[in-house]
Image (cartoon, rainbow, N blue to C red):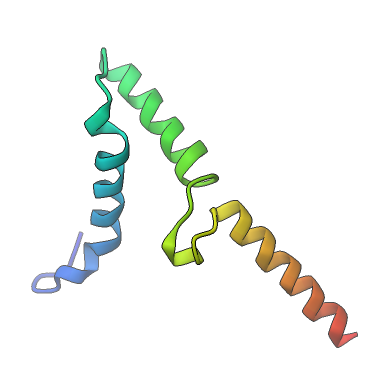
Length: 81
């Protein structure tokens, strides 16, 4: 929930839901509520959080971004030794 008078509080959530609607729900006809739950869960947990590239991550998937940062952290740690 956003604070009164601050429309930017909810911007991240609004952006995510726009993406979810644009990429999935506007193009999918669900047969029932359970199917909708399953398809949306798979979209978020498998595709959005692991595979889909994100502009905030320099257009890397979250998995690639995390791997790159872990490799960088390891190389910095080794350089300090």
